[in-house]
Image 1 (cartoon, protein in one colour):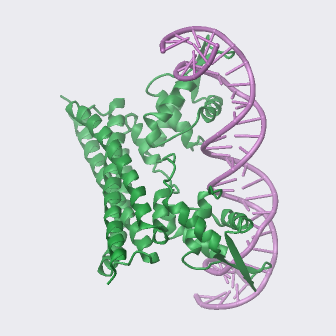
Image 2: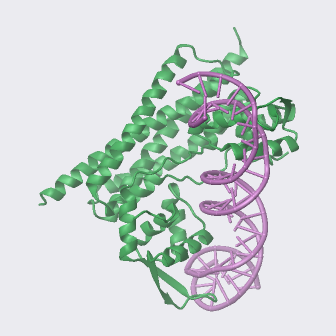
Image 3: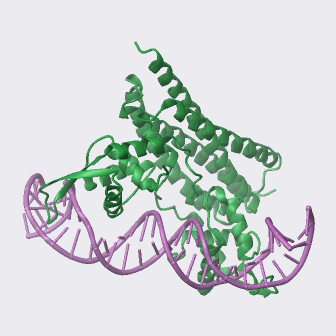
Length: 191
Length: 191
DNA sequence: TCGGGCATGTAATACGTTACATGATTCA
DNA sequence: TGAATCATGTAACGTATTACATGCCCGA
């Protein structure tokens, strides 16, 4: 059986596999913590939930809600859980990588070094902040490593990726700043 | 003056700033080497070239082409070069990161460790291959570092990012495999 | 009483991919 | 002769973002 659900559908199933939620709550988790590796706005999520339900992968129970519509608490069906499990181990098809900062870097030879240094210093600061955040979370996780088979394992594994990613990114920014400082001083008193 | 051009537009300008090209040639460079950090199909590129031309950022000269239409060799106008230069040092607005492998990882606690190990070994192999490729290119670049102000600087800087990225990614995959092997052996003879 | 959080949805627009359509030249 | 490369473009579809629209409850 081939997966006909979009990647967003699996992201939603991954959230619901941890806890039954409303569409609104799923949107919240799509900002944090999942926002680091997948994002979606609430309107997209509501639409996808309807498709998932039509496919029998999720179901909901209603409750009185604020506003005119009723509140719907979604959960994964056994078929949904099976589809999610199958999808997890399928090798991801190569996605188009899009990184605006690297694209700018590719054209950086045309621009002003001083401004570039400023830009990379800002980027470096952001990466260092995130790294510090991840490292403190990591310290807490390392003390009591969650067992495989619990959702904590997924948290830890994704966090580990974020950790090494921010380190790589900060390292690269520092290298760029160093290169640009050299270029600047070469420009000031050329041979 | 605010930039009204899409990011793809600037990617096209960045290609043309290095060499005048046809739309077809731009598409080729969007696969390689730019494909590592930005991608677009030829139909999108042709459409964007028309918009860039309407905005006065590029122009073309025609030549006899194969097929029914004439061949158009595009170049950047002075205004286009100015827009590109301005854009380069503007801090990139935060983009939604989307990484299917990390999303799968977040749900990995539900799946079979043996299959996961297989998936991460495949990913690791890909990253190691790319890393080896980047490292050999890097060795050549390091011998004669291109000066800032030449397009070679842009190549080197983007390559440097790819290099540290692949290292981070390979490191993370190895960590994942290690964790999963432990989980597997714990599962075989539990306490 | 006014803004923010909770909670649902639709509609318009923009962006991106895939498929369709044409046709010369070159190489196996 | 048949496929690959060069070269242009349009059309259809699918995905994603932004704006619109409603309305309760709670705290400042």
